[in-house]
Amino acid sequence: MSPKQQRGEVTVERVLDAALDLYAREGEAGLTVAALTRLSGVSTGSVYHHFGNLHGVISALALRWLGRLVGELSTALTAHQDARSGIEAVIHTYLDFVRTQPAAARLLHSPFADQEGTARAAEIRDNQEARLTPIEHWLDGHRKAGELADLPTPVIETLVLGPVIGLARRWLTLGDVDLEEAIHLLPDRIWRSVSP
Image (cartoon, rainbow, N blue to C red; front, side):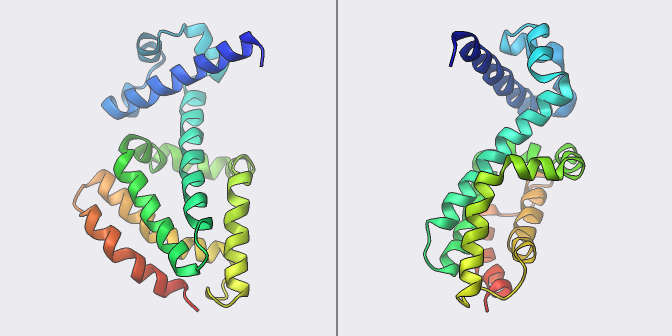
């Protein structure tokens, strides 16, 4: 990588780190180009050069954290040989991510992320292909072995992640859920929905 490319990567990282910090402190309304340049020390021209506009910054930030979350879920799932342990690990990992990275989780569960996900679903899936493929292979192998219900992969993903995402959204927005209690209760109940 050339020095210019390295400087570009450093600039991108500074902007994205500043964007998450602003998002955590002030929400989407506080995330402006002026605030980004002040906090990151990166020029306005550099922000526009690397991201196109503020929407591009938020998209890049969401993709960055989605990649991290999917990577953690993939690692947790594929580290387990039996289906139940793998599914339970995904649930624990997801809720632990929400608990330890609340600003990133809030962004990933925001209306903005929902709109981006709907508008750019195929592009986002292609972007995450390397992380998603091991998950699909793991699920397929356990389904064929009779360790998971004989359901299509998207249905299994929905049965596992749907309740987790719903609980995460509630915790992030209302805060009226005991996340630690949920980490103990959800795995068994979700496992029943995908067990053979």
